Image (cartoon, rainbow, N blue to C red; front, side, top):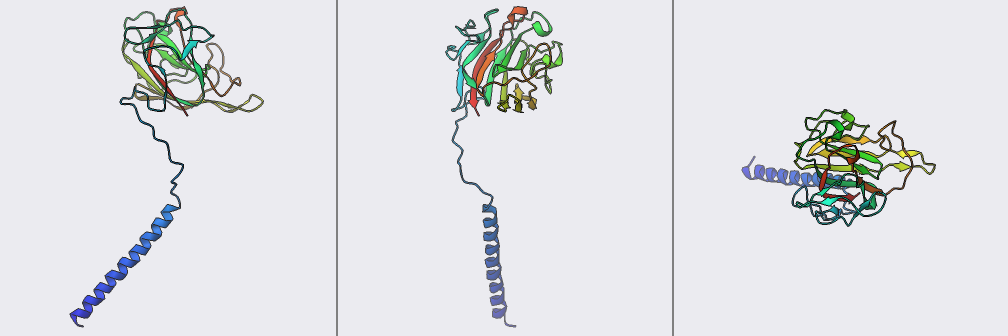
Length: 257
């Protein structure tokens, strides 16, 4: 067989193979396209420069300057004080504070600090709490070398869920919670259709992994649900009446989900 014939055959084989490969490739892309979605296009959100900074779509609840978005839980002017460093600090006996706006499903970032001087023990050492929808408490407590009941330490869903780990920093150091909260849904008769759920990251460490909240937070007794609206205020606790040390907060922002 002449070399020219062999070469022509080889070229024809390559051309045919390439053409077949293209057909096969086009077929694969068509099949892949059946499971590709191009809309709706997610909106652009600009992240903050640091994890503490609010992204562009967040509602800033406290920025170190004023408490315009807060009121006393039962109405009236906030009695907490703004320190020189911009921290919002509990004034003992002044009462809980609540957002003027109600929230349901949300992402919350909040930073908190216990006093550097240790006083008290267990639940009287740097105690506060964050109540989602005014009902469901994520515990805030000085839990650094501070034995207490484990479903009441920092990172617990109070009296319901023990944190996976103790991620507490030393007293006087700023700490953070990043939380994903899913509101409960009720049937028209008030019964629970789906419970509230919560994921908590404490100082960058997962401590609650999408756990189901059992009901309204109770100090004594078993938690239970009572139907409420789909948007309720966030509440920060003044726990000072029983000796708990005044806590401080800063960089509070929320994203509605």
